[in-house]
Length: 120
Image (cartoon, rainbow, N blue to C red):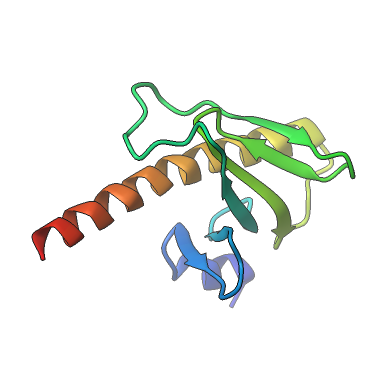
């Protein structure tokens, strides 16, 4: 069974927390497959953004890739499960699109949690 087939058995996004950590984590199970630390800054709010998320990929001071959603969600400390294509720009664009969807899914997750908790 290929790596893609194994990952495709799971949801596109898996959200999680680790004990003793302030940040959360996200696993993206489609290309480009990755695990990343999810952080929130002071601009994050629980309300859904009024426009589609269109974040940017940049580099940390150590030269590692990082994602800024522009709406208070950051992804960093990426661990990639796929090889990178020779075209770096193509890879970065695929990563940016995946991160945009992951950030949007974070808002949907928060909205689902509020609905469930409100129903109790």
